Image (cartoon, rainbow, N blue to C red; front, side, top):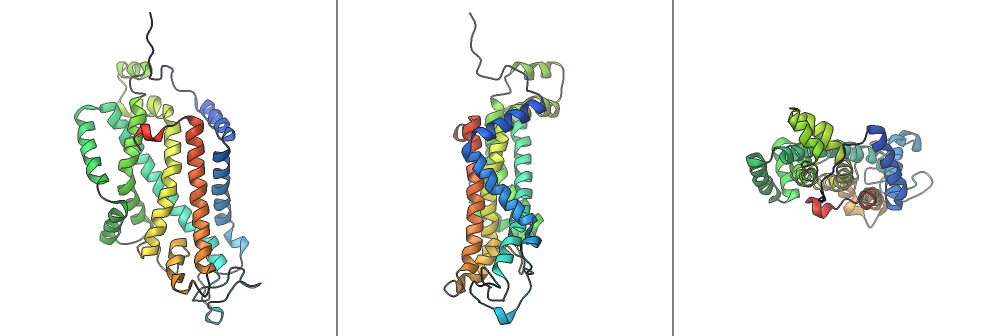
Length: 297
């Protein structure tokens, strides 16, 4: 009489097979397709920004300050006479660039630490759990403000601050997914062959939790975009006159009754990007059957 094993019992598929399966999954999920299309559109607009507008996003023109939408300035101008549409188009570069960098660092570090905790177990897992609990007890925005206040502003500092805030959460999610893979026969066989922790993590564990990592990346990216915009709004993110959506809202909120598009345009851009990332994450999560609550998110 045989018993059922809930852990994966087959070795990981090859890279081409995993890529083909991922593509079929994306195509089968309408939410994922729509979300990825929205994100791709934002990326395309950010890349082609110099071709979509002839205005310099940081050039001041006091004679055109606080102008409403018109043929010359489709979305109007701000209090410094800068073209609002140009600043929104170029603002996607900062938002996407810093957000992608911060999310990549966060998810990569969290994935490695989470897998290591699942593989090693014992005292390492226990100590790591207590450290993560201590970090997670601090509110995200407070931790961000502490880091940027101590180290200053700039893209590199923001990436570090985001990693401090979100790595513990990624570690928990990835650790939960890796714990289902660690008891598998092929992991046991790899250990019996004398393979090291890093080799087992790279060849046996990671290929089997790629779906969880991809969903986690999309979800964290949406939160990272919001946090970075919040920092810019509070004056701890992008430095003026950098075109940034959060900074644009902060600069133009006092004139919202005069030129509402100066504040509404970056808000709409930010909202659509976050909606796209959330749709992509939710669609992939349902298509792959990833239960983020069960995994520890």
